[in-house]
Every structure is written in structure tokens, then in C-alpha cells.
Length: 581
Image: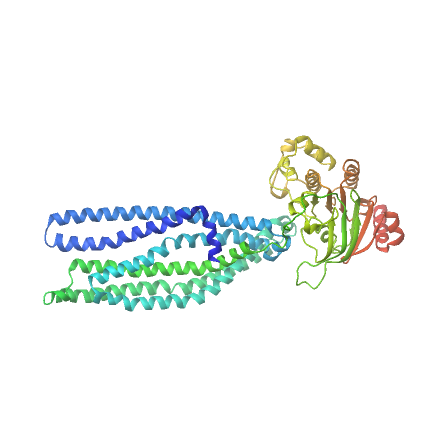
């Protein structure tokens, strides 16, 4: 996992190397300062030698300045490397998500992907910055300070041999307890994001049903779960700091006690002695050694927290898209003919239920096909297989006489324009939204497509016309206006196949008829598949397909189905009675 994520450092590799190198310089200066201070006291102040005092003072200032400069440089490089790593990681994850099929998205859920791209990456950024600074500083400081302390007095340095095992034991004792809690916390974050996303997206429904209090309760419950888990983890980690502080104070007392005895003993036996300056240096080294262990514990805590985000980001980066381009892909779609040959489909390999069962259909190029069926009859599933949003589980689906799995995905989807059941517009002008269909479309082509979709009339009523600003999600246009804009966007692709998945449900019957009439007159070569609830919307189609329980229950013209299909006849008669009433 670490090796895969390390690739995200890329152009920030130099900064990631310089940050720890500068940290080494800072540590070296900090370890040198106590030795200089000891000499300043013992050979300058005690012996009243001003030459030593001046030289050691200058050296002390130079070491302090060098330490400061190394520290600033290290922080700067670490910040650059950390933010760059996070930027590249987000880019790689987002790029990977764009390659996901619908089934890949379903596997992770939208809320989970958002959490991984935001909170999880932020946690990994902080951990990475700490690793290239603190994870270098702490062990190096501990080793150099320990060596320097042993250079002054091996016997006094044995104090550390008692304290360090205690700290290490506490550190590794906390790890398994805390990791399980953080693993649970990040899964709860997914649930929290899901609740927020659903609430904001469906805020109009929430308010219309006066369910604000219920939504607040849901949010509070999940937020409370995160609070409880974090409190539980922090209570465990809270033992770390007092144990560290306790060890530092005990070591300071031990160094003071034994050091004082050694200074007194130096009068009788110089070999066992210790100078006052060396004792003051030992105090500094004691603090440095044990504070380094405290830093290591902080690094350790960050590693514990980041272990789960690391796994979650790695899952996104290594997830293989279900849909891939073949090695020798077909680069052109001959025509808009569609053939379903004994097609069956499951939404997942483990699903027992088949959403589509043994569908056989031939749709000639340029035909207009209506698709009717009750809710849940798999009408949308049927048409989503055509641009290869999903792959068939059994059988073969051909477009232009070629299996869709043999096409280059981009080529296939460029020739299949689909207006989904759930219409989506993005923040920006009307022109910017329409040019999703064709980035190079001229103003004349945009106006022509909007006239075909019966959208030009209401666009001309806006003060800014085609430069009218669409708010996020298209909330400042009506449902019918949104549908017509989405149809115009699809027409700008100039596709060989046009699929309207219940895309005129929000427009009146007159506008619906005008759109279909424009299709017949201006895009006769395009194969048109129209999923509808109203028989009137597909009555004049070349072929009408009746779907029932994932199977084709009948197909033919209006007159043929009236004679042969009880389902079609029942729907038609019920709608006629409703219209007469």
C-alpha cells in the first residue's frame, strides 16, 4: 500500500528528500548546543577566561542560527512535499473514479468516495508531513543525544535504560486498542456524509414533509457515534502523555541525584567526577532523549489514525474498473442498428436475481422505438446496456453489427446520446451546459438543437438568453425546462442512437408531440429509443417494446399490440379513460 501511494509524491520528490536532510542539520545543531554551553560554563565562566567566553558565545549563536535556518527550511520543504503529495493523491483517486463503471461506484457509494477524497487524504497529508520531519527528528535526536550523554558519563546515561522500555511498552500496548476504534470511526464518517448529502440534495422534500427534526435526529445520532468513538480513543491515548511526562521527571530527579553525588565525588576521584557544566548538559540531553520518545509516540498515534485512511485510499487507487477497452478496439460505429441476442443481466456477479432475462430484439438503424412497462420492469436497465454503462452478463449486444464490448468506450458513447431519467445540469451558463454535448458547437448549432428540443422559446425569455446562469443542480429552472435542455445537450452530439429515458415526463403533451415531430423531420437517420409512461408518447413509433419483469412481453406497432398484447391494451384503455374523464 505504501509503495503505491508513494508514487503520488512524483515532482515533489526533491522537497520530500530535502525536508529530512534539513531536519538532520537542525538536530545536529541542537545536540551540539549543550556541549558548547558546558564548555562555556566550565572553561569560561568558572575559570573566568573571557577569550573562551567570547569564542563559545559566538559559536553558540552560530549554532542557534544554523538550527533555526535548518528548521525553517525543513518546515518549508515538508509543507511543499505534503501538500503536493495530497494534491497528486486526490488527482489520482479522482482520475480513477472517472474510469469507474456504475457497478464500481455502487460498490463504494458516493458518500464514501467523497470522504476518501477529502478527510482521508487530509489525514494522510498530515501523516506524511510528520513522517518526513518528526519521524526523522525523533529517532535521530534520541540517538545523538544518547551518544552525547554517554560521552559525558556512561554511568549516568544508564538512567535512560530504565525509562525507555517502560515508554515503549506503553506505546505498543495502546496500538491494538486504538486502531479498532479508528477503523470504526472512518466507516461512520461515510454514513455521516451520506446523511448530509441526502438531506441537502432532497432539502425541498424534507421541508415539504416537515421532516427537519427527523433529519436532525439522524444527523445527531451518527455525529454522536463519532464523538463517542473519538472520546474512547482519546481516553486510551491520554495515558501516553502522563506516562511520558512521569518518565521525564523521574529521569531528571535521578540525573540530579546521581549527578550531584558524582560532582561531590570528583574531589576524591576525578575519574568518577562530573563538572557542573556537564551536569547541566545532561539535563538538556535527558529532556531531548525523552521528548524524542514523546515525539515518536505522536508519530505513532498519527500512524494509527492514518492506517485506515491509507487502506481506504489504496482501495480506490487499485480498484479495477469493470469496463475496459479491448486491446484491438473498433474505432467507428457503422450505423445505429441495435441487436439484443439472448441478453441477460445481473447487477453483480453474486446476485441471484436477473434484472434482464433472455432479451432478443432487432432495432434497425433510424427506427423510432417506444419502450413501455410498469415500474421495475427493467426499461432503464435495458437501454443502459447500449452505451455500455453496464456489461451484459449473458448473450451479446451489438450496435452497428459489432458487439459493444469490442468498441472503444469513448467512440461508442460519443455515438450514443442518453438523456437519463434523472436530469442533471451543472452550475454555469446555458451555453456551457449545452456544450457538454459538443465542446466545439457553434451558437447556430446550439440554437438549432434547442429549437428541436422546444427549449428556445423559454430561453429567449431569460434576460441573458443563452448566457443565463444555471444554478447548481439546475434549481432555478423548472423540471420541464431542465428536461428540454438535457435533450438539446444530447442532440448536439449528433449521435447515431438517441435514448430518452422517460425524459419528457415533465413536459405537456403538446410539447412532447412537437419534440417527437421535430425528431422525425430533422434527425431521421438517428435511431431513437423513447422510454415513456404515456402511450401517446410512443403511439406513432415504428416499434413499441413491452417490458414485464425483465423480459420482453411483446413488441410491434400500435395496431399490432392492440390486437396481440393484453398488457398494452390495458394500459392504453386506462389512459384513454383517464383522458376522457
